[in-house]
Every structure is written in C-alpha cells, then in structure tokens.
Amino acid sequence: LSLQRLGAYNDILTDTLIDDVSFPSTDQTNYALLQIRRYAIRGFFGNIATRTAQHLVISRVDLPGAELQLLELPSLKRFSESLNSAVEKDDFRRHMRRYLSIYLPDCPFEISGTNIYVMKTHEATIIARKMIKAGEEIKYLSGKRAILTEEEAKDLIRRGCGFSIVESTRNQTTSYLFGPAGLPNHDCKPNARLTSTGTTGMKIIAITDIGIGEEITVGYSVGYFGDDNCECLCKTCEVSCRNGWNSEDRIGFHRSPEASLRYDSQERHE
Image (cartoon, rainbow, N blue to C red; front, side, top):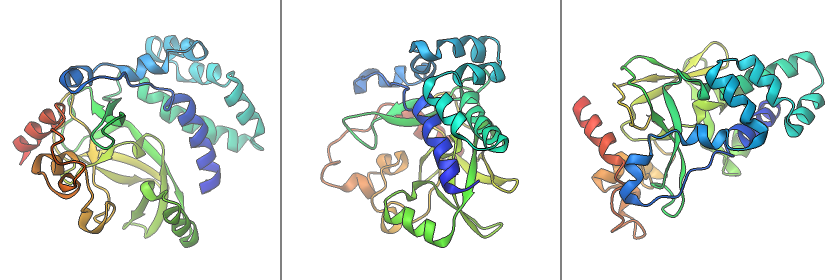
C-alpha cells in the first residue's frame, strides 16, 4: 500500500474510532485512580452512531458484524464506496479491524490520557490492563507500514510529520507506521519494542514484565527529541529531572502521580 492510500485509510478510521474517544478532565490527585478505567470504551461507544458496535465487539466478539455496522456510517460508507477496487476495499476493512480489535474483551491494553507532555490537556497513552510478560507479543498492538521513498521521508520530516517514521535494519527500508502500533509513547527506558512481521507488518514485543496500570512505551530514535534527546519529556527523564524536565517551563511542575507505578515497576526490572 502506498503512503497516500494507507494514510487515507488511517485518517478516517482514527477520526471515527480513536479521536472521538474523550478523556475526562481530572486533577493530579485522582488521576492515578482514574487512569485504569475504561475511558476508551465509554468514549468510543458514547454516541448513537456506534452504540450497536458495543454489543457486537464486546458482548458477541463479532468483528465482521461490527465492520458492517460501521460501514453504514455516512462518512465511512462514502469513503468505502469511493475506493476503486475490491482489493482496496478489503485492505480498508483489514485496517479497520486493527482498530476495532483494541476494544475486544481480551485486549491487554487500553487508551487512556496523560498530561505529561502538554500540561494543560491530556494526550493519548497506552496502558496495560492485564499482566504482560517479558518476551510476549502484545496482542492487537499491531500496525502496517507504507514503504517510503527518500523524497517522501524528507518531505514528512520537513512538514513535522516524522513521528511515525520507522527505519528497518533488517531489510534496509524506511517506512511510515500506521495503526495501533504507532500509538505508544517514547521512554528512554522502554518496556517494549517495535519489530517487523512479514513484508510490511509491525508488532510490539514486551521487553520487561508490564504490570496492570503501567504505560506501554517504546524507544524512538536517539535524536528524535533534539540532540541526544535533550528535549525528551518521558517518565524516566521526569523522575531523573533531566533533558526536557530541566527547561524553565517544567521546573517546579510536580511529577504526575501515575508515574509511580511506572517507576516502581521499572526499578524492579533493573
């Protein structure tokens, strides 16, 4: 799949199945308790257009049925009908299923919110809702890569869209990652890693044991957050008060309560 085609699939599906998820505003004191609740499911199924999917995805585990229901939504129906071939329509449904799968009952993670990067609002974060053992593939946290030309990669970086660019040392390719596998945040001491599967697939493997309520993180490139990641705001940098946490706008901003689970668990694995 080309960057443009897979990007179009991803945009409309994240608008429908991810971006509409709302994270309730909360203060620092009760956020640690709220983070492991199922905001994602409540938000995802909070509107009339997708309520039928709640019964099909969660209760009946009927992804094909949920796909059919969602393809009746005006925006998805128009988009699907605009695709030129049966192959394109099948690819679109496959990508839809990647996102639908994260709401299945056996999914070991959920989408929650964090204000660690933007202090006044919450952004997405991936939180474990089941114990995940080191070496285990994190079910449903998968994605699809679009192989990039050198010019496409440079253009994405120039436009500030390089956050999902993946360089594969195995097959010497540069790709753009789409799907749930692109959702985990960075940490300088990540508990999971991205790995290729097949020609253009991507999955995430746990590096350490990941406890319930712990954020699932991966490592981005060394210079992604400036020289030697000097602007990094990950939780490891937060507890060490280094890199981005030494900047003037961060000095005095107290550590987020939900960080405790991450750090305590991390220290046990060291």
